[in-house]
Structure formats: C-alpha cells, structure tokens
Image (cartoon, rainbow, N blue to C red; front, side):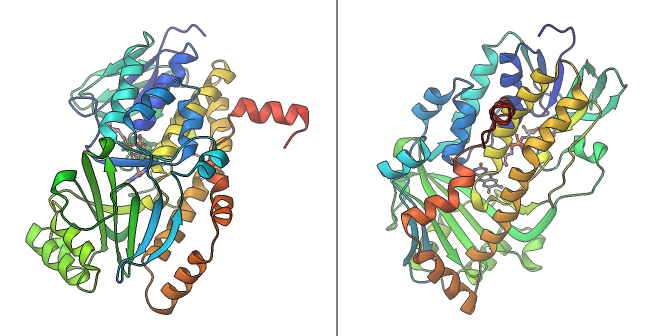
Length: 406
Ligand SMILES: Cc1cc2nc3c(=O)[nH]c(=O)nc-3n(C[C@H](O)[C@H](O)[C@H](O)COP(=O)(O)OP(=O)(O)OC[C@H]3O[C@@H](n4cnc5c(N)ncnc54)[C@H](O)[C@@H]3O)c2cc1C
C-alpha cells in the first residue's frame, strides 16, 4: 500500500515497536516518536507465555528471540511461609511444548527490545524519532498532527498511542483519569547469579505467595543473571518513600516469611520501585484517526505476566486491521477494538482474581492452596488454553467465518 504520510506511533515500547514493524511489513510507512533520549527498555526480566510466538512467528522474530531467551524447567508457586510447593506448571517438559506448540520464555527486556529495534531499523518504511516527548495531538479529520514538548510538529494519516500506562494520548482521547493503584508496591532487581548465596531453585520461574506479599524470581541470560521482583501491600508509612522506611516495612511485612524469602529481600535495591495498578476494561480505544494499544488501552496487573504480551499481540492485530481497511482508519480501529477487547479484558480481570489468590490469608488461603494443588497437568493446560493458544488474526477469523468453521 503506497501512501504519502506516515502513521504516527507515540511510544517505542514493546507494543509500539511491534506495531511499527508489522505496519511496515504491510508496506505502510510509520514514524515512531519516543519520549526518552534513546529507544530502549528498563533493564529487568520479562516472562512470556507461548502465545507471544503467535505474533513473533509471522513477524519473522521467533528465531532471534529464542536465541536470547531461556525456557524455565517449570513455573512453580510456593507457600511463602513454609516453602511448600503449591502447584507446578511443567513448562520445560515435552508435554507443554506438544500442547502449546511454542515454549514459555524468560528474557532480559533489553535483549527483546534490541531484537525489535534491529528489525525496525532494517525496515526502510520505519523512522525512529528519539527524544520526542509528545505533548498533545490534533485530529484534523483528514490527517493528524502531534506536537512535542520541544515545539516540533509531526503530521501523519493516523495516530497510535502506545505510550504506556500513564498515556497522554489516552488522557486527551478518553480523559478518564489516572490508572487505579491497587495498594501494592513492586521492587525489581537484577543481580549476578554468582552472588545468589541462598538455597533457591535457579532454573525455574518461582512465585512465593504470602498474605499481602509475594516474590517472583527467575534466571536471565542463560543463567548469568538472577531477576527478583518483590511486592507487598503498602501502608501509609511507606507512602513517605524513603528507602529506610521501605526497608523497615518490608522486614515487618515479611517477618513470618520463609528464610529464603528474607535472604532474597536482602538482595533488593529498594530505590527501584513502582506502584502497582490497572484500569477497568473499556470497549472503545479510538476516536476518528486516533487509537490506543497496549498499556495505554488496557493496563493489567502483572499476576498473569501478560501485559507486554497483550501489547505485542495488539501491535500485530492493529497492523492487520489497518492494512485490510485500505485507508479507512475509523473502520480499521473499530475492527481492532472488536478483535481485542474481550481477550484483553479477560486478562485484566483474571489477573485481578489471581492477585487475590496470591495474597489471600486465613482459611481462604488454605482453600485456594487445596484447590490449586489438586489440579493435574491436564487441568492446568486446560485452564491456560484460552490464553496460551494465542489469538486469531482478523484475516483468520474472516476465513473461518466464510468456511463456516469455529
Ligand atoms: C513489575 C512488573 C512486572 C511485569 N512483568 C511482565 C511479564 O513478565 N510479562 C508481561 O507480558 N508483562 C509484564 N509486565 C507488564 C508490561 O511491563 C507492560 O504491560 C508493557 O511494558 C506494556 O507495553 P507498552 O508498549 O504498552 O508500554 P510501555 O512498555 O510502557 O512503553 C511505552 C513507551 O512510550 C514512551 N512514552 C510515554 N509517554 C510518551 C510521550 N508522551 N511521548 C513519547 N513517548 C512516550 C515511554 O518512554 C515508553 O518507551 C510487568 C509489569 C510490571 C510493573
């Protein structure tokens, strides 16, 4: 599809870069405006279910991603108080791969970002514009224009807001306030594996679940690094924000936790923290020539580890819709919403339910643990199938409808 003006994408995160690459592969030119001085990711680990490969495969990225990623031998949930294993998903076993076709992976965000950036740089139809913090946009009916904080204006045929959970594009388009904090705070650290002295399983994704707190850890870069995320319910005291206050409160919250968890906590750099939150799902993410994707459209809690995965799926789906609509952006964006809103809403709502399971206390906790521990591998695979089987691209849905298939 030849066209004079580019599609403008605000935000060069995983969602924005996927959309850019997918649009370029359809022959559509794009300009990505990134507010940071350079394109790049915050340096932590990230997990992906096998569904992410339903986007990476058609984009030609599967091989490069797999080279940099690791497959954990299992994803396990442990009782944070006594260390007992509650449930194990055998991600490293042949049965998992046979059921879901693709592997479960863990990867350094920087490495994944580099794969996407390199692929975008190889596309002549993608222009990457760092240091371009967008302030506002105008939809002129037949075109859009965005203005950056330093006063530059960029014009295009349509605008994709891929600017994350605190999206300015959303604020202007929908104006529905800030995301809702859920009262928890997350701390993330990466340490050399050689510095991990405590007795932990190093080749798994482990989640230690406790009343009001949890820790997730897993290896990165083929076992050279160890990624730790610790989460706890905030009190008024920790709102003050000093590292000393956080340390004291963490020690108080984790006082009954298993000794391994206390050892992991001691390794955390408490300067790097983030309030946890999401938004209630909505059905419409577009008006006219402007649309949202990823966290800007449907931010979710990290309990299913699917926020970035949804942003990547969005990027591919949106590009398919734009290519099929042949210049009718309103129609393309409407089709994109219909294709994506239920799946992403389910991720948001199920992530909230699982969040409550992780942090339950008392008899509710015992009931959840019993229910989970009774599940067979087949039960677990069945529970995850709606998610890990991937999403249907719009052209596949249309083909299935034509042939009367499901
Ligand atoms: C602790 C934690 C753990 C997580 N773990 C996982 C996991 O294991 N698996 C998973 O799938 N997801 C995970 N997530 C969720 C995931 O991080 C997000 O869902 C994902 O990053 C969203 O991608 P995005 O491209 O929509 O937005 P972002 O990654 O937020 O990217 C937005 C980009 O837009 C830029 N930007 C912002 N405003 C502007 C502006 N005005 N102008 C120009 N540029 C702008 C930003 O600089 C950034 O580059 C986790 C989240 C947290 C907090």
